[in-house]
Every structure is written in structure tokens, then in C-alpha cells.
Length: 325
Image (cartoon, rainbow, N blue to C red):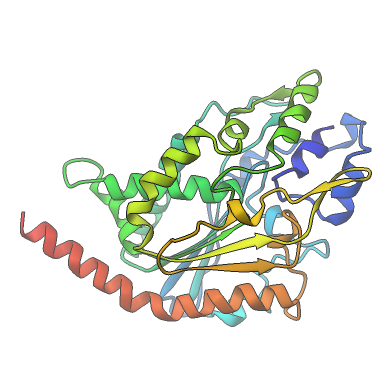
């Protein structure tokens, strides 16, 4: 039961696990998804003379490492033959947070904004400590991770010299974002997920706070779209969307986040990207020869090349504004 919920909108399981999860009823046979050792920021690749930070953020019921790891145990973000080989000058990091809807342990009471503020706080602290707070950033966000990221950038943009000004450095340093299966308008699989959470509550502790946010056309998402629109043109954006249905139960599958929700029409400097995979596997690439890997990494490489010049301009503008006060 736990694994079935874990799969939906999550990213910790492979194809076989996803398909088998619907028949899984032995709770003792499934590992608890909550892993306190996978929370916060972790540097995976230091990079060679790094000029850009690439930061990955997992989705609902996701995991800082497992979300990005394929069935053959290859994590394309840290495998030396994959992303680090294509963009050797990138420092690659992953940020984990408690986005679990169920657990045998205590679940987090944090809301969306709490996660967003913690993301900014963790990144800002790390980059100030190693004196890289002006280095360009490219975010890679899967599913709910994109919603957390947008809230984080809204928070970062609102920081002023009189209040948490160092938080503003994250937005100023952000060049590009690749949203992967992010439900900007909500997801089709949320109702299914909430039903499973209700059933699981008989056996384990459950929390549907984040699922409620992801309801189709939810008030929170609509408010966020309005707030984020004013800063969205400050970034180069890629909207990656799934093209295959995710198995939910025997004989049942669905496109969890349809293109109409994963792609925000009319956004400046934005491009939709079709990924020939389902919602879970769209962020798992098993080898450098994978066509979807080549497509995703190609876009990241081009963004990494353009990022230093644009972000340098951002910081010049920011300092001029502060100097004029």
C-alpha cells in the first residue's frame, strides 16, 4: 500500500516497481519512504573550475537520490559518464525535503511556503559559506519540486535590504529552470493519490497537505501563477512534459501531469520539451546513449554556456540599485 502511494507523483520507483505496486499489500515488505539522511542540500559533483551550479529538486514522495536513479542504479546527475562529462564546469547538487504523504514515522508539519523558504535558506547559507553566492544557478525540478521552487523564487525576489537580503541572492543568480512534469495547473493523478492516502491512513501516518495544493486548478496554484508571472521572464525556462501514461493499478494508467498543466502558455523565453517517458521515469536515464538524456542535457549545456554573462548583468543591476538607495 505504501509503495503504491509512493509511486504516484513521486519518482522513487522504476517501471517494474510501479506496475507491481498496485498489487503490493504487504506493508511489512516495503521500506518506509521517509529518510532523514536524504534531507537538505548535498553536493554530488564539485566540478572542474565550476562556473555554474546545477541544483536538482525532487517531487512528491520523492527522494534526493532515488528520484534521479534508473533501474540499473545509474544516477545521471552524478555518474561521471553522464551529466558531469557533458558539463564538467558545473557543480551539481541535489536538495531533499520531506514531501511524503505517508510514513510509519512522524510526518513533517511543514507547508509549501515552509519548504520554499528552507530551500532558499539552505542554498543561501551554503553559497555564502564557500563564497560562491554570485555563481549562476540552473534549477532542475521534478513534479512538486517545481511548485516549491517557484514559491522559493517568489520569496527570494521579495527579500529586501532590511529583511533577509541575502536570500535575494538566489533569485539574482538564477539563470535557468527546467521544470520536469511540474503541475503548474494541478495534476490528474491527485484524486487517485488522495484516495490511496485515505486507505493508507488505516495502516500508517498520512498527510495530504501537499496533495491538496496539487488539485487541478487549486486556489494556491492559481495564486502562485499570478505571483510568479511577474518574475518568470527573468529566467530561461524549459517545460518538460511526459508523453506516456504512468501505471497506477492493474489495467489502469494515466498521464499524471498533462501537457496543458506542465506547460505555461505565453511565458517569455520559455520552450516546451516532450519527454518520451511516464511521470516517474522522465527523470531517470540509464545511459549516455538514452535519447531523452541527450535531449535534456543538451538544453542544460546551452543554458550553462549562457548563464555567466546574464547573471553577471543581474548582479551589476542589483548593486547599482542598492548603491542608489
